[in-house]
Length: 231
Image (tube, rainbow, N blue to C red):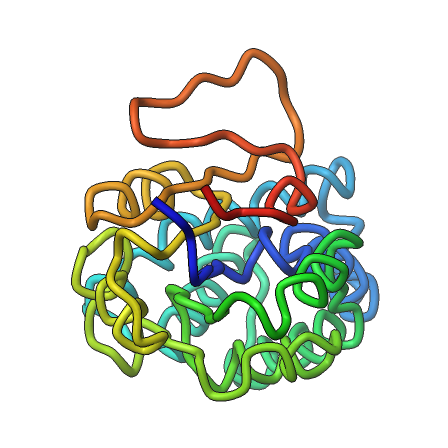
């Protein structure tokens, strides 16, 4: 069945979120004078990302707001280090300022979107806040490809892998799910969620070897493999 539309995840699919977050937290900790509390930069990044991996799902479940998970991450991180902070909201904002100057799209993102322009509908379905993702896409120059076709869990009220948000993304494009591909880097949220919602599921694995996927999921190593997605 031909693919007439493609929905994309954003972080670590179109935009190098992991690389950008690493740059941001290391610059921030150095500026705050607390990077030396860690045995290595890798240890600092591992702690920051590990806490994010635990707190972000609380936002996706509705337990915390988007800003609430940022506050929780900051408080846990500083408590672990034994560092006092009168204003954790401002502390996170200083981190975000370092991070946001480093946003970078993956090299294969813009060429693919240009190739799809005019012949395939494209959109975004993301587990995040729409203003946050819109700013990122604008910063790296990808926003014009999507226009208003950006659907985020914070505003929609359900998060991937809930089938509802994938189906709403298809409706946003005006296409039935069997004619829509979904591309993301997370196996649980993206690949399985899209497949179970009836979309053509593409799991983007940029690194690693011997990767296997369940039936109905296509593994790709680069967005360039979607240059001709029909079929």
